[in-house]
Amino acid sequence: MKRILLPAGGAVLATGLLAVGLTGTAQADGDVSHDPMANNTAEAASVASFWLASNGAALRQATQYTWDAKEVRKVVSKGGYSPDGKPGTTAPTGETKSIGRAQNVNIPKTVGKVFFVDGSGKFRWCSATSIQSNYRNLVSTAGHCVYDTDSDTALLDNWVFVPGYYQGKTPFGIYVGKQAFTHYDFDTYEDYDRDYAFVTVYNGIQFERVKQVDRKDYQGFTGPKRAWGGRYYLLLSKDAGRLGDNVGGQGFSWNQPTGKPVRAFGYPAAPHPDGNKVYSGVTPKNCYGTTTAKAVGAPWLKIEEHIGLKCAVTPGYDGGPWLQNYSNGKRLGYVNGVTSTFADQDGNDRIDYITSPYFDGETAAVYNAAKNVWSGKIVGPNGELYK
Image 1 (cartoon, rainbow, N blue to C red):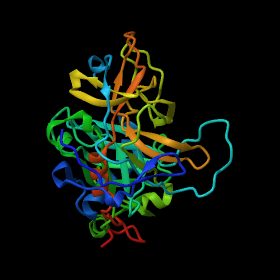
Image 2 (cartoon, rainbow, N blue to C red):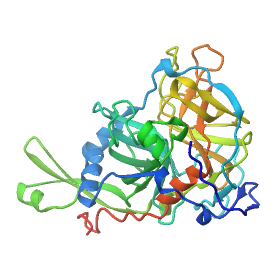
Image 3 (cartoon, rainbow, N blue to C red):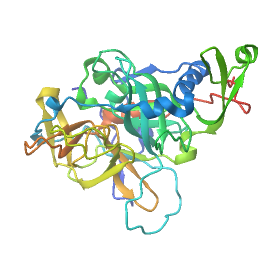
Image 4 (cartoon, one colour):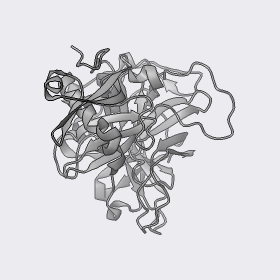
């Protein structure tokens, strides 16, 4: 694989993560793929209304992205991983004060679900998180939660992020994807060693109420709307503001040492390969542990450079963040991986490991390209399309 060399320099932060300024990262444009999702406010409003219609019925109908049970096997240990440059971090944003000690793990406000329509027309979801960016408008997830690798189509349709999602509720609004950034090798070759994505999103839309109108008023309204059975409805909504302003954004780190503790979050839902269904996908779950010191591989998926974490969760969890140095009080840490695949290490048809691509300088190049892209609003103060 191609490697990007980072500039010399760096220091150890008080957080314990090795760091060098992200702005100094060398980029190779050939390794970064970026594709448009909703190109303009009209397209974005259409996507939002698709999910908001009938009081979020489509959101409730969606099911988790599901792995084929035959692909859940034992991963194999590879050699030690060699970073491709200096380590680095970018700091999170959000809570400035700790909420104090808590006996239980506090779920980050940044974590939620991404919803989309797959190549077969099914409503699906993965896990994801808000991540820090210059315009506070960026989502981190798995590459296969952005591109439809099953049908070999391009982007998944009607892509949105809902932080804090719970049974059709969108407490912080719904955020429509504007542009997807992935590694060229995943976009082109479905290389799961590069199974990560960063997606810029428009300002959120907060649904308020449905108003039935006549055809003339329906045709004159430029905001989210739907027509059913000869009746016309306006989906009255308001601008919810920028994602990062509402829920914060996790930090980002790359080229960090392996064999370090992380806390992973996500919404597991699918049954284990043996059919045992432990999780509902309704609420997020977390795992805590030390990542494998050596890289792990999955030859049937052409994976050579993942890291592993002991964690008995199931699909639906994919795309969720692996956070280094997670502060339970501030609910913030540093995204240093995303759940990509699931493994059964003891051969009992129960998932007991998850894996993530190793975040290196090429990951930083993709992130760096995404973090500087502006998105804007979808609706104005009266629910009309923002221009």
